[in-house]
Image (tube, rainbow over all chains, first blue to last red; front, side, top):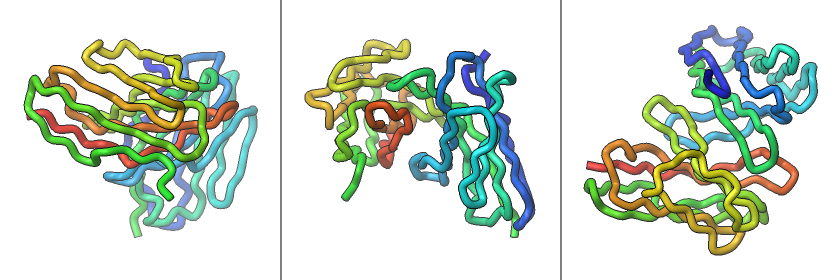
Length: 110
Length: 112
């Protein structure tokens, strides 16, 4: 079983729609959870972090965490073509250790 | 100012050669990482260092040897390069008490 699993996609949504990205993880001791965005040929950049159960909103982005189900999600409201990228879920058991999923490729069509 | 910088950005070399990739961060972070991203975009942790001490060595062949002369630098030396080593290698750093990682621009290594 992979430590962090994501649907590789591609996920295609029309402009203005909500994009929903999902991630599950295997280690119940995981403490911190992140979403990174990676444009083609670029390095990953952090867009959201979440540490406790529930929702966390930042602009058009909402991260959701359910530790009991070992599930993390990212919602992107009012999706824009500029949101087209690969979204990487990352999970950290402790400082100095961050594990990534394989990423979900999102395409937002104008 | 570049926060996490890697050199070189591109590296093409023949099988069997030895090469190094350098990484420097000016963020004052205590932890530095090396990740390998393969053609399927899977970002796999290789090593992490905290204040020059090796914390994680993720079953990487011993042809790969990281070196951290100080907490701002983490270099990666690769001996006897193989075709399967072709990938993008990312250096990253994170602050003490905060696992969020900040990435360098990556080094695309091609072994021919």
